[in-house]
Image (cartoon, rainbow, N blue to C red; front, side):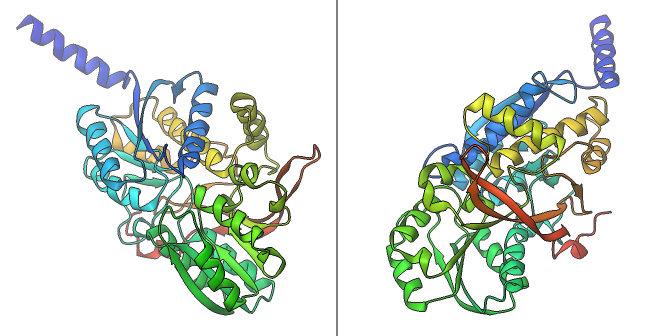
Length: 386
């Protein structure tokens, strides 16, 4: 009986003072042609953790890293292990929307916070919004909305849209068409992970659009831009991409032909705010390369989790309090102003960028202006959360 009383007393003491550590299940695409994306998110997350002394919100952090290999079934198995056996407090790291849709339902059913550093499927912005789903990145349609707004503002009369045939590509098409007021010459969809675009480029040349909006993350974007430039098509039509379609990974792979390419982003390497001025040199010092938007998002994701745990003073077992603390977004984002809408997706700016040369001669993005200011998403009115 004495042992039981001591055990109860110890449990009460732990509950009173909060957890002794926080466990993160980090599921990402870390192999194959799109491995650079997951690696950038992981490295950004780990940098924030390192600068925080290995802690999140004052708690020692244990990060369990798993490679989904861009296979939903792999991601689901990892999630089940992290949720049931490892008893993680957060799931994060996921790159692609189809992986989010495989993993998030189990996390939400287990009342474990799913924090997306990248994909933000439209399903979770509206009627299916959930107290345990946060996007530290963007709604999946928003980048393409900004691209549609940009080409409309430039008076471009006809555009061709190209994306992989998966939920992220479909969301991109929806977003682009919401804001683009000209003629959409065609919507072309490729296989997710496709690396040869000879057939598509032939079709695009035949259709002769004024501009081409391409949503191809990771290795897909690297190969497309190389083949697009090699085909001489950059002289005939304007190519517009999301930030990740021209990020530092792609710049390193393609080089000088990237100069002059326009992109849309929620973050840029040259944003003038204290958090970004700390992040960019710290990332380069740690990893010997310039950061991408993916890395910036991974960094912000760690800072968001850190802010939530810190605000509840480590008492992460109080889910309601932790959710309110995460919603407060009490951290300095590398993107500047950041706040959550009631669906727990960001309200933020989207910028026009061009690939140019920095003062030191290195190729990087330069911010030209704001395309959408304080943009949330199209479905928040359908979210019943308060």
